[in-house]
Image (cartoon, rainbow, N blue to C red; front, side, top):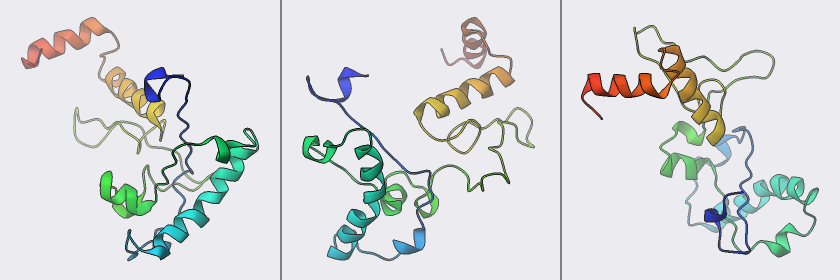
Amino acid sequence: LDPSMAPEGMHALHAYTPATEPYDLWKGLDRKSPEYEKLKEERSQVLWKAIERVIPDIRKRADVQMVGTPLTHERFLRRHRGSYGPALKAGESIFPGPKTPIKNLLLCGDSVFPGIGMPAVAASGMVAANSLGLETLSKHEKLLDELNIS
C-alpha cells in the first residue's frame, strides 16, 4: 500500500471494469444532467457489489467516491469513445507486442502487452526497452548520452 495516496489512517481503493462499458449509453449525455448522474449510479453498482463481497460495509466506510465513465475518460484522458486499451474479444485476440512496421519505433502503454493498469503499462515500457537491448541501466544511460538528453 502506498501511504501517500490517502491521509494517515485511510486507504485509497481503485476499482474498474475491463473497458467494456458501452459508449452508446453515454454518447450525447450532458455530464451535469440528472440523467448522467443516475446512469453513473446505476452502472457503478456492479463494482460496488463486487467490492462488497470482500468489504461488506465499504459504502459506509467510503469518505470519497469518484465514478468515472466513458465520458470521463474521453474528456480527461483523451481516449477515443472513452475506452482504454485495445478492443479485444476474449479467446479471439491477444494484446499486441511493442513492434511496429517502422524500424526502431516501438509501442508501450495500455494498448499493448501486458495491458491496462499502472503495473502493466510500466511493464510494457520495460518490454519495449528490452526489445531495443536496453535491459540494463547502463545501456539506458549510454543511449541518453548519445541522444544528448541526460
